[in-house]
Length: 126
Image (tube, rainbow, N blue to C red):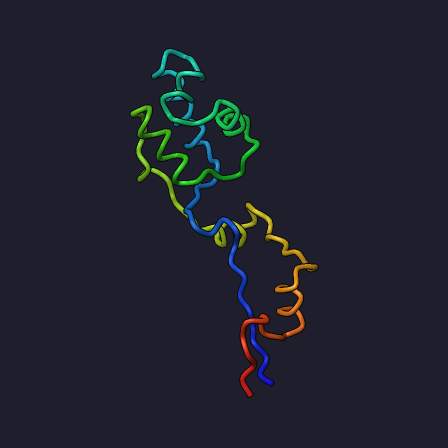
């Protein structure tokens, strides 16, 4: 039987992210001042929930996705996506900003992979 090595991808691997830097916080402040010093207006124009915007402002989020920041920038008309460096989820894990994801060990597919066996729908080569 041939041992197969499996590569897991990060669950948030479909988008690009930028870390929450002083530049991102500055952009949020610019949006706030542009829209009459009202966070509710910024959230409404940026098509984002006020609760999510609050978490961004308070630093409870370590990185913001390109999709979310694009909605904010497009809706408010303040800023540019090209002003920020963009990274994949795996890059953020490598930089130590995010923790590596944990996979459920009790799941039959992952248990077979941990034992070096192919998933049940694949046949071993040999």
